Image 1 (cartoon, rainbow, N blue to C red):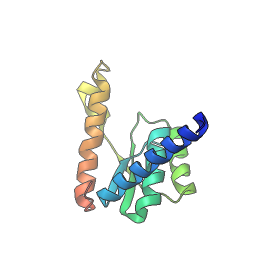
Image 2 (image 1 turned 120 degrees about the vertical axis):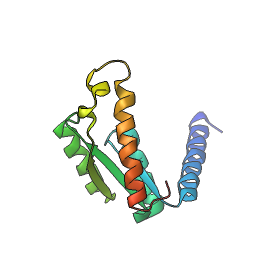
Image 3 (image 1 turned 45 degrees about the vertical axis):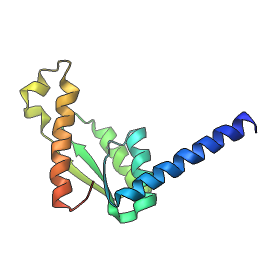
Length: 125
């Protein structure tokens, strides 16, 4: 087996494992930014789960408008179910201090809002 064939076989195994994991969840909310990682996960989740997945895009003043538009365009292009919600990390002093923990506070805001959305929309994950 050539290196190329071996790499392709490994990728195939990883893809099947990802599909199996997503199927096992039954439904899924994806924290979607439009970046490579979240776009790929949203795309795969939609391929596997159809309308029992939802990409959630957090919109805030810290998200450049161009990135928001590109994220929406990608979701529309692939018919990925998308909901846009607003986060309010700018009202948190611990975020606006802009210190080394800034990303933590941004993600904390994001996942707090996502948990609320998960409950409201009756998603398991």
